[in-house]
Every structure is written in structure tokens, then in C-alpha cells.
Figure 1 (cartoon, one colour):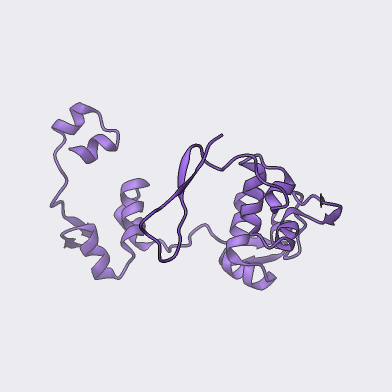
Figure 2 (figure 1 turned 90 degrees about the horizontal axis):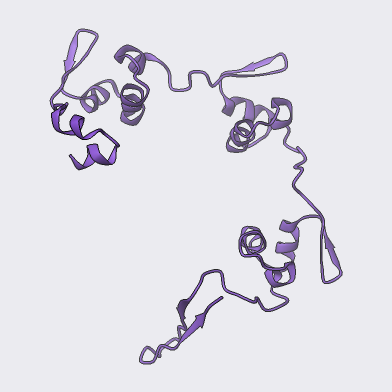
Length: 196
């Protein structure tokens, strides 16, 4: 019952709809005890078949017979590829990056370019030294670029504070006791209190 309530079922359905345990699955004239038994017998990934049946409402034949990367073919100009991975390999772009670029609305010609210019790079100056972008500035100061950018964007630190040149005026979180860890001395554990 809890699972049904968490899934957003109406109370009447939670009480009155019978459980679907023990429902047999019929495929190609053969009966299977469950989706898991079907997948095991046919050597198919359970998550894929379950999602197709339960989430997308596919028929059992389509859920089992359609290949995994259906609708993943890609055409670049005159050249057609079976998958994004094949296109990415051909053009020398990491497959995950190509997928991200396409899902974020990049035109395919720009998405497959390994040297595509990103418009969010802006030059930055820190203490009279100029950098082409935030990432190169962070690396110059020995910082992880994600940490550096988070300090500026999420925490509201100045560029100098994020680089460690000036003391930060506040901590990332409100009123948290941060224990000072001293090797070999566990008896007294002083804390630093940081508040906004």
C-alpha cells in the first residue's frame, strides 16, 4: 500500500485494485512467470524491458524485439551513422559530449566539431593578471575549476576570495560547527563556528 501511495495513486485505487503479483507473461506462445523470467530466458536487460512495458506501455512484442538504440541514428550532411557513438568516434568527439550537445540544442554541424567554440568563456582579471576564462584562472591558482566557479556563482564570493587571495567574508553554509581535526589529540575537539 505504501508504494502505491508514494506513487501518487488515488486512495480508492490503492484499496480496490488487485495486486498484479503472479501475472504470467505470454510471448511467442510461451508463458513466463514474470518479466524477470522472460528477460532471463531471452537474455535481455530487465530494466529496458520493464521500462518499455510499464512506463511506456509498449506491447510485449515491441518491448522484446525492438533493438535498444532504435531512433538513435544520426545523419551529418550526406553521411549516415547507426548510432551517436559511431558518429562521435568518426569525428573524434567523446560520445557523452556529443549527446550532451545535441540534447542542449546545438546544431548537429557544431555538435560534431571537436574544436567547437563555447560562447560562455569570458576573459577574467585577477590582481592584474589576465586569463582567457575562469577555468584557466582556477588552474593557475591550483584550484578545481568547478569549486572556483561555485564559489563565485553560488556563494557570491569575489574573484579574489574564490582564488584564495583575500579572506572570504562568509562560509558556504549557515551556522555549522566544523571540527578541527588534530592528529593524535582526540580528547579535546575544538570547533570553529561560522555564521553569516
